[in-house]
Amino acid sequence: MDTAIMAETIALTGHGEEIEAYFARPLGPGPFPGVVVIHHMPGFDRATKEIARTFAVYGYSAVCPNLHYRYAPGAKATDAAAAAISAGGVPDDQCIGDVGRAVRFLRALPTANGRVGVIGYCSGGRQAYVVACSLDIDAAVDCYGGRVVASPEDLTPARPISPIDRTPDLRCPLLGLFGAEDGNPSPEQTAQIEAALRANGKSYEFHTFENAGHAFFSVDRPNYRVEAAKDGWKLIWDFFGRNLQS
Image (cartoon, rainbow, N blue to C red; front, side, top):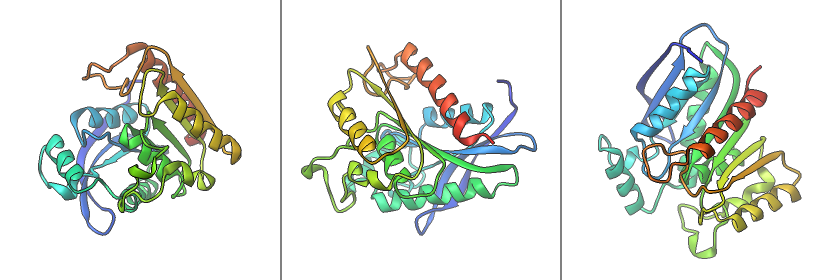
């Protein structure tokens, strides 16, 4: 792909208040599908913005809302992430509200084709699962989302429902990408999620990569596994191409 793009930081009124978001889009008349990128626990960082730009290069309008913005406006990503963790984590209802606003933003673009997907990494993978069970979107990708299978001690006032218990409400096809050496989610937990999806008759595709653990897409971390990441991106382009391109 060699698509000209434009990228910038914008303001979105999310779950009741304004937050910042990163918006990358192809230049041209479209129509283009949309993707909401949910950042990982390290936050609204350079690597996540690069992912948004990658989607734009491949012909998708992409928005990444800064889910940690409220906790430390203007702070660097790691400090805002630490502030969010200190506050008990991003509440699921707040995440759903912020992502829902990003979905509406993408669908309202004059270049939109009306179809929007969501993708999340790490904690964002968990949030992508929650969002896919809560909003009307067209496709979702969970990249090694931890605590989709939540134990009772994992539940909090901010996150009162185990995401796997939301499975009956899943509203779109789901792609899951996991590492065989990951501990959160472990292969056993991934099997539990797959069993719940199958039991509820949901449309899903799960792929587990050998010799890969958590965060294998992260090119700037020791966790990066080039072959797993390359194959994972091929699966993402195929999945979103089938479900979002019109």
